[in-house]
Amino acid sequence: MIRSDRLEGKAALVTGAGSGIGAEVARRLAAGGAGVVVADIDDEAGKRVAAEIGGTFVHCDVAAFPDNEAAVATATSRYGRLDLAFLNAGIATGCGLGDDFDLGRYRLAMGANLDGVVFGAHAALPALKATGGTIVATASLAGIVGILSDPIYAANKHAVVGLVRSLGEALEPAGVKVQALCPSFADTAILGDHRGLLQELGIPIMKVGDVADAFFRLLDSEGTGECWYVVSGRESEPFQFRRAPGPRD
Image 1 (cartoon, rainbow, N blue to C red):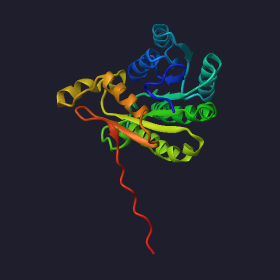
Image 2: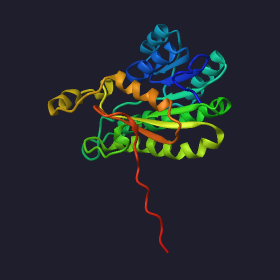
Image 3: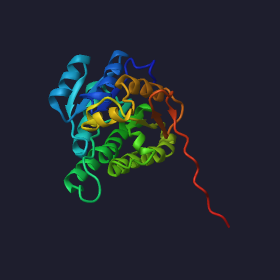
Image 4: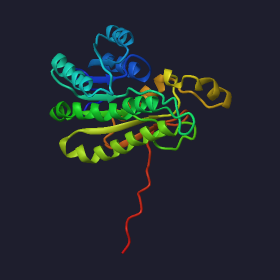
């Protein structure tokens, strides 16, 4: 398994790597000696990060299955292997249910936040099975708790959490580890217009570096199928889900 202290000679694919959490993790992976494929839908931002870290840029709309296949192919052709797929790309929903429901926005958010993880994991699996690699998906604290202000975002992030918990056990015999990163509000573009409201309510906004710290703690975990919460003022660790009640005779 890839570890934070054994990155030399490893290869990583990071989606949404042009900014925010993805960019910070890509920088640290490259600093540790890993070859990094910087995948982003924003060509300018992605190329800038790739040039900064000596990585390889690939244009990638994670909601498009062929783009995910192309990103994995770029990693294996450029570096000869793939050890880590950090499926991080995501967007804000921008609509709710009721009067503000917008089908286009709904499809866009589900495509980026859920399809992007499903497609990315499926595309990366053959290469990761060959190296005993790791999938890390960026979910959210909204994947663990309900979010009254954005139920659709909570829905797609809950789906990512369910996928990771299921794949963790399913892929363990193949030597592939699957984890989820579940940060609370971090200082990224996804906050959008909510930034001022959060500050007004006194809700802390975490530094991107703090989320990246949690990512590398997660990377070193011996577990799989875990969902690591990242909350201001707390040490990150896997969320302990209660077991569902079983049937009775």
